[in-house]
Length: 67
Image (cartoon, rainbow, N blue to C red; front, side, top):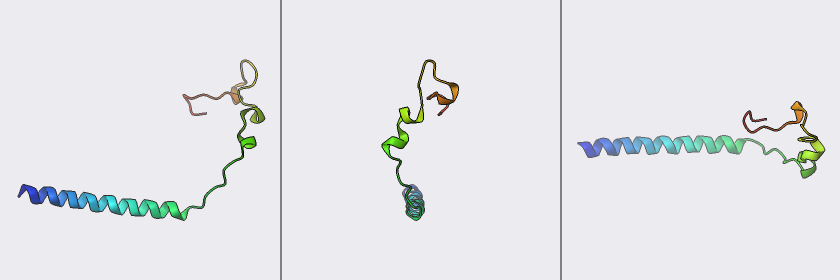
């Protein structure tokens, strides 16, 4: 009796994961890819980030707050 219960749970979990994977891959394929920015567009010197000492508050990059 225990084997059938575990087998049924395993089958249900496998079916659920397969369905979730299919749905997420379909949703990802439906999105259009955004063009990547060029090196010049993301250059910290061009953007004026972290220039001077101390850098201005609006141009400071912090890891803690995700800015």
